[in-house]
Image 1 (cartoon, one colour):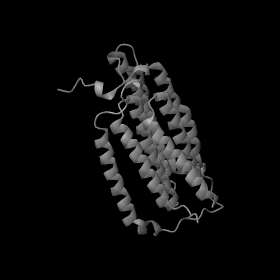
Image 2: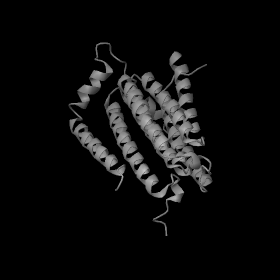
Image 3: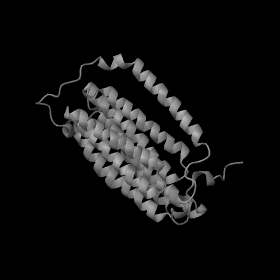
Image 4: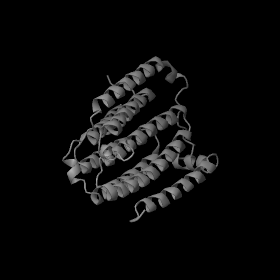
Length: 103
Length: 169
């Protein structure tokens, strides 16, 4: 009754996670939650990379996943630093209240 | 059979955690649900014989990035933000765009379903070294230059975040 799991299962799961993360980035107002949604998107990419790494029987996909995690760490650190600087200057963490460049 | 059940359990953790991450009002709750989602992803790595990345996911994501997130949530006062509207005015537009893209992805995955059967799934040989050793071999020979560039990126991130969090920028 239960089918064996194939690569396509992982691809569908990864697409779903990517779309959930995209909704979070586009629709939420809180910048902290937007950064968390970015982590969801990067994790979806990693699931894809590792599914194909298993599919083709090589470790290159896993190497790429390591680099993606590295970039995610750097992005989170700098993003949260910017968030702290923003909060210190504007006293808000809502993305649509930061409209200094809006005419 | 056990693999199938574990896949669905971890998929449920991943997707359920993801949905709750983007819908909770309080940022702390979002962070906790994101940890659940990341644990599900770590389980999926383990199912696919990527043991090193499983460890990296637990130690780096859940132990590192999420602690950083929780630290910033505590540092920045989010109480008044939690009482306000959580979604911006264009949320229905975002939802519509995402649904269109999702339908497109599912359509193309269906059309290309035959392509995923082309190479036979490689059987793991018993004599081959473990996952971590194979990763290290490839990472330190073939991908040595990207590896070094990644270290420069981390250095830039360290300097950048220190400067961003300074008192007077």
